[in-house]
Each structure stands twice: as C-alpha cells, then as structure tokens.
Length: 336
Ligand code: DAH
Figure (tube, rainbow, N blue to C red):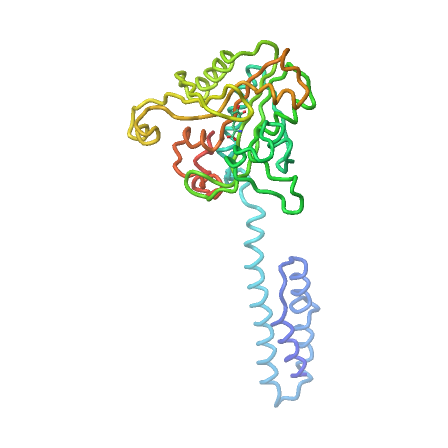
C-alpha cells in the first residue's frame, strides 16, 4: 500500500496540462468523492496499527501534493483565461506601417508628372542583348563610346549582358510600335563600377521617348522645363551641348538650384547649377535601325538617374543608403 502511494506521488508530480478539462479530470481522479484519496482513506482501518502513523503521513503528503499541483495549474491557466477575457474595448496594439522606398517615391512622382502630359510607361528586360543595349542605339562593336559604360556580360553567352541603361527599352518599344509614341521607361541598370558614395554598380534610370511628326528641340526643352518645375519647383534650366551616340544633337540638362544655403554651395560646387539628365533628338540612324521613316518622323529622348534625383530631393549624401535599407533611413519616408 505504501508503495502504491509512492507511485501516485510520482504520477502527481509528473502531471502537467494547460487544458481545463484535463485538469478537472485530474482533480476528480485524485480528490473527487470517489477519488483515489478517499479510496485510500477508506482502507485506513484495515492498516495494522503499527503502520498507521507512517501511512497517515503518506496520505497527507499525497493530498498536499495534489492540492499544490492543482493550485499551480490553476494559476498558469488563469493568466491565459484572463487574456482571453481581456477588455475587448481597449485600443489595440498599433501595427507598424510600412514605407515606400524613396526610389519608388521619386519614380512614381516622375511617372505622374509625365503621365499628365501623355506619356505611357513601357517595360523592358534587365538581361539584354547587344542589339538593344548597344548596336541599335548607334553603338556598333568597337565603338569607343561603349567604354563609357562598364558592362557586366553574361559569361555563358557573349551576346547577353545586364543592361547598362534604360535606353534599350526605346529600341524594344520602337520595334513593336509605330509613331506617334510617348513613353517613359523606369528600371534598374547595371554597371561594373567601383562602389562609392557617388556611384553604385546597380542603380535606376528613367528613359523618356517621344516620336511624332515635326517634333523639335524646342518641344524637348519645354517638356523638360515643365518637368523640373513640377518636380523641384525650379523652372530655370540650361541645355549644354554634349554627346550621346543615339541622339543628335545631344545635350546635358542643368537646373538652376540656387545658392541659398551652404548645402547648395556644396552640391553645386558654388555654381548654383546641377546636372540632372542627358537628352537629345533621336539620331536618324537609330530610327532607321527600327524601321521608322526618319524623313517623316522625328523625336527626342532623355535619360536620368533616379538615385541622383532622390539624393537631391531628400538631401542624401551617400548613394549606398538606397541599397543598405537601414530602417532608420526608411522610416523617415513613412508619411510620404
Ligand atoms: N543612356 C544615357 C546614360 O545612360 C542617358 C541618356 C542620355 C538617355 C541621352 C537618353 C538620351 O535617351 O537622349 O547615360
């Protein structure tokens, strides 16, 4: 009999449950009217007198162990029950809002501006072939201007590369469509450049293209001026002669940023002017490559780096921040 009680003590010690029904069953099994403890007590009178003391102590130990166990389990479950019955009218825990990435904010804003004057968005692949990235854009093999863009080639296929600019989408779009056309192509581009605060091997560009009859350089200038006014609130621009193989004439666009703060002096190197994009009239040779009649149609194109524009708008000094995605930086764009 004493051994049986020892076994029961072990059983009580090992019992554990968070389930209310199981705990109740445990209680009934040991402390219920017809439970084990009462059953043992009923046998008490049959215990020889000399063993009664030890036996009584053992039963008490068992009784206390059961009570202690029930108490412990009750405390453990009341906390979960309390939680279930928590005041449902209390305000909830605030769930954290995500943020748009600054690159997407700027991209979306630029698209919105150009959409308002009739530009549609066109897409192209990031893994490009030589024709769309270079040759059709008037950059034949061995053309020295290819060196301007350090290219990542796909090792297994010398004809494939990671596009170095979104100008490749111009070609794809012109191959598939007939003028008039007005498109904007945002996307990632890749160049084998050393990473620093000012340049990265991955960045984003937005390409613009407009082809129609009688499109002139004046149209290009007006469009860009509309754009800089909308985006930066700055309407003073200048177009500096430049060279791109796919446009003739070509220009680089500067915005007059002003010299109102020390930052302005620093970022404009004391001139007040900031370069924001390249542009020009689409070279007739490019139109010929995509079977568009250059005697009938003309057009302009432009291309800009989104990171550069975002750095200007948000006064960020290191391009690497856009890729590190430190939460402390991203959180600052929550309300935008
Ligand atoms: N593709 C040029 C670059 O990556 C940018 C550019 C310049 C695009 C002039 C154009 C353009 O469409 O007309 O630097």
